[in-house]
Image 1 (cartoon, rainbow, N blue to C red):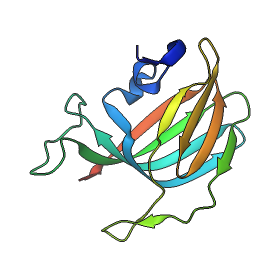
Image 2 (tube, one colour; image 1 turned 180 degrees about the horizontal axis):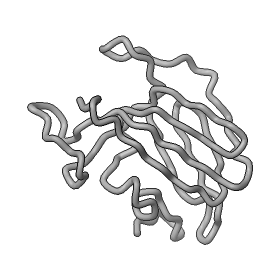
Image 3 (tube, rainbow, N blue to C red; image 1 turned 90 degrees about the horizontal axis):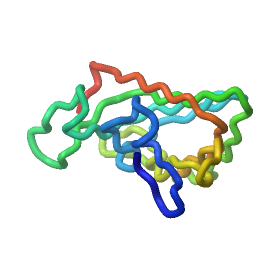
Image 4 (cartoon, rainbow, N blue to C red; image 1 turned 120 degrees about the vertical axis):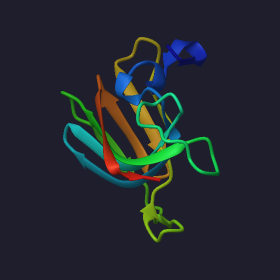
Length: 138
């Protein structure tokens, strides 16, 4: 299990659906939130340990795959969106940066915080689902 200072857990050691995914290098293409649900469309950075990894011909060690990350809770999901406009990538798509952090608020706390250029969110007892689009590897 991965921790940061004070025993706070991070996503990669807790949510099996995010094993071998690097959110800090994945690109947020869109974000949608409802009362108890937070959904991202991402260009996901997959490490060589991920089952869907395909070695790139050149460039970084990551393989990128389009996917949907859905974070659900029984409690209200609190989201504050950034007022910054999205960037435009080389393919002409909008992106909202990365998910820079996804970690517990405190040791033993059931609330998790997500932050990035897109904004920030607080989710209590998150359930994390990840679906990859097999046709959109880069």
